[in-house]
Length: 103
Image (cartoon, rainbow, N blue to C red; front, side, top):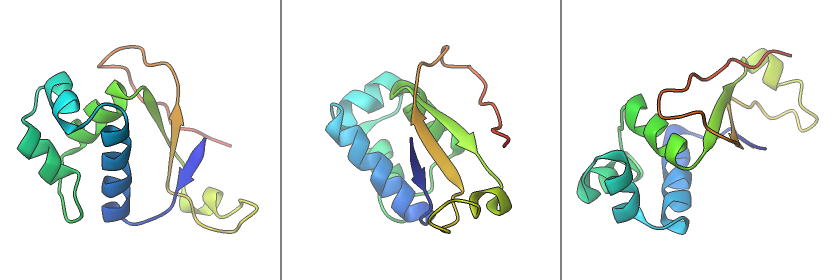
């Protein structure tokens, strides 16, 4: 379970790096029903993908989104705010719902 606390651009670049490491943009684009150029633009710095694209990618990678409030996140041992936690886990299908994480 790695926490992400960077900017939107850093998140998109990091997600793009994972996609490239797991078979490439072309393979992911085909899997989620998008074109390679559209997915490439979405995952670059300054990209502006809709949540549906981000969720489809995360679902295909078997990542489960988990969200925390900034107040809860600042209780971490590092003191850095965490806004989104990406955990690799089993997915229950393309339309599975993300559950809010409460502590």
